[in-house]
Length: 187
Ligand code: ADP
Image (cartoon, rainbow, N blue to C red; front, side, top):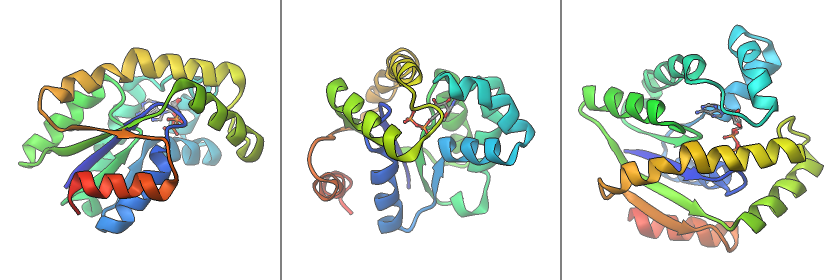
């Protein structure tokens, strides 16, 4: 089973994705983590990504499509995965749809974590103070929220036509939201 966790920056994708992946025994593929590790290690991917990442912009599809392809091809993801942070653009969605279709698979569920902008900004500010991510500066946060609305939110319409989008209210405790996801997926 392939499950995509979709939501604005700060909506809790990482936290809920981790809980869900553990419960279902599926690997979680997190493009943000892969890019952060690549930047830290100074690999060619990381070096290409850094200036976009730090500015809160999407790393161009020309850079990330190959990475996404490789991740989906990993043996651990043969039967399913929880996708966190991608697809995030129309081109990425096309690649994921096509790759899975070739394997007679598909995205089964899309969980849309719905959180108000006010709450997102509050959470990202709190996280900036503790984690020190280079894209948690006020300017980069504003850009990430803008990019989400412009490039990623349109994917909701694309997948809604297939009837696989579930809206999850992102407000409540971590446990309450995890329970709601369990109820929606039915396991
Ligand atoms: P958030 O959703 O809070 O912004 P992520 O860790 O998912 O956190 O993403 C952080 C940054 O990593 C993005 O702003 C972007 O620069 C880069 N990134 C992550 N995933 C992708 C992707 N699929 N395509 C392009 N850039 C990405």
